[in-house]
Every structure is written in C-alpha cells, then in structure tokens.
Image (cartoon, rainbow, N blue to C red; front, side):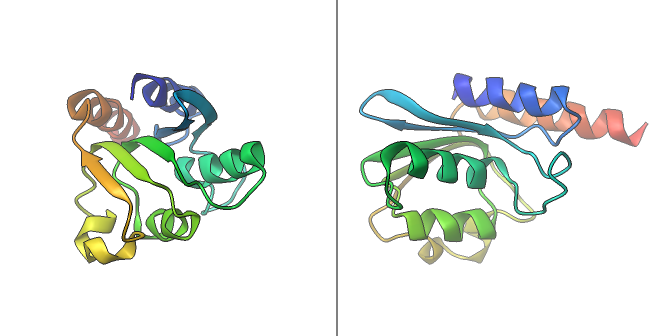
Length: 138
C-alpha cells in the first residue's frame, strides 16, 4: 500500500485527485498508476483503470489471475466492474469510499473468486484525500 500511496502523491503533484494503485504478481509490481482524469480529460482515467491496462499489457493478456491490486481508496462501481471483468484475484484498499464505493451497490459486482481486504493504511490513504479537498475548498 505504501507504493500505492507514492502513486497518489504523483497524482497530487499533478493537481489530480490523489488516488494511487499498483498491481502485484509473483511478489513483483507489474503496474503502477494514479488518477489522470484531469491530465487526459477523461472521466474513466481512474488509477485502477490505468493499472488494469498497464498490468494486462505487461502480462500479455486481459485476465489478471493471481494478481493483487493495491489502491488507496475503495474502487468505484466503474472500476469494480472492470476489475470483475479482469478476474483479478485480490483487491486491497485503504480508505472506504462512502459515496461511490462498490460496496454500497453490493459485493456481487466483483468476480466471485476475488478476495477483498479493506482498511490497509486507511488513515494515511484518507489523509491525503482530505488534505487535497480541504486545500481545494479554500
């Protein structure tokens, strides 16, 4: 998760919403990504979506079996749907997303074999987001 937080910092440095993600396979980081929605002028350029594409390119296939996504916030419905289609094995997230997180819809959106771990470094993941939005509101 610390590596995902480094990606969130890269997003923050670009004045993007500071969300970062990495994907790991065989104890090796195969994808790193952060939000690029402003940079790319693309509402789908979430950190998770960028990481999925990068990881799929790395492994040369669309399925992320035996891969783990670490992301600083609970994925939204769009990202959860893409993660389901990728058949990723595990999702580890930091802060909960109380407005648009996938768990608000229901747990059934993910692939049935996907394991979910929540709350890893949640305070650190939440702080970077809260600080970003507090600064924006001033």
